[in-house]
Image (cartoon, rainbow, N blue to C red; front, side, top):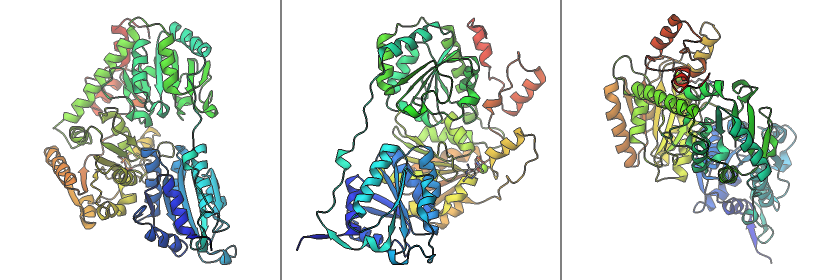
Length: 585
Ligand SMILES: Cc1ncc(C[n+]2csc(CCOP(=O)(O)OP(=O)(O)O)c2C)c(N)n1
Ligand SMILES: [Mg+2]
């Protein structure tokens, strides 16, 4: 008789062929056969028992974001499946290939409103590039292979629903194969010299050009910086692109809009030409001037010309294209525009350093970032939640270009920090990992601190406790509305951590900050996770999207009120630096 293999085990072997070495989930009656297969395969593929499927799902997305290999999570039929949804939409929005395995009742009981049954595929189809139910045990490994290939090819999550009986049958051992080794992505070139020369011509005529880069330039930091200097074009990155360019690059203006930096927003008001590379920035229509000359480089034809009226659109690999620009273009003369922006960056950095070094007044978030910068290792990984912490991290983390930075970008779900930190530690056990979250976001996923404890994942968790949903509070202020529904009851997160077997430290004064972070280093070096709860004021971070500093635009009283509220005495508007360098505003 021909050799056979258990279909559940064959399914896992297919995942293994795509470099999957762990998978998140919670069992249920409809995935138990998969559980038995995971037990049998436990030496090759690790089951990570999370406390909430949403955490597993978001961790799987983070796996792909960090490693490039497919992340996998599962949930049982009905409630376990619906809990996966947050990860599903994060993957859809950030275009991340992920595999979600969804449990289902055995075939004989399907489609008759059995316990926990619902029609899963249409539900998942909105988020997914693929959402299908397996029909035979023999096809199970094939379908998983198909799902993963499509997830990579179409940049999104794939869903495979498995009726429980189909993952515990004997199938022919030679009846399936994996396409993992055959998978290849199309290779793009630099774009045509004609197009690049056309773009160079526009750049040579511009007075205030900028380069705006997104995640498509990961791996091209040197080219971006060389380009910036050669053509005297200061650089803006998307918030997701924060990790790409080192913080100390002289002409790095930061990112735009609200999760953003002052120099970037100011330069966007002034610019007359933008080179937009590897980004699908959703706020472009709002933030970019409609009349600027616009050159776009992207590897995805779907986004060329999408976000702005575009003069030259180049379908290309960002790194190769920037290299070709550098080869073909003449060096620009040193420009006053560039110099004014470099000064503006230095002034902004000084403001942030002063805030991080402040020792008087009530405790704010900045001194915690001073400590995070101080203890950060060269290849640390930052998993950042959504809220004020996203904008504070974008502004204050002094990344070096080798420190990955993950969050929920377009979907922007709260509760993403902790799952990302679990993923980071599982794939990179020897690297330092931070989970930075606000108190609202931390409360959404805090049960999974115990996953860090259970799997010995020494993460440094920092909770910024302002007893409020600060990010939304500020929106309500901007709407000139009374605050409503934004306060949070104070929670002792150190106790929450302690209750789950993790050391919890509370910081209420600036002088406690350094010892707390020193202890965190010690504990994590000893293999133990730690949580630092920073009890701080609810003062608003400086709103760089509503700067009130420029004497040409605002009266003295308004400027002084702004400076007082945000400790911004020494903050200088870009217009002053432009004047200093003789650039007309
Ligand atoms: C799941 C989810 N619910 C609601 C929101 C809307 N939202 C964005 S930021 C934010 C407040 C975050 O509060 P917290 O975590 O305490 O951080 P803070 O801004 O106070 O630092 C809210 C409610 C969201 N992004 N995700
Ligand atoms: Mg808060």
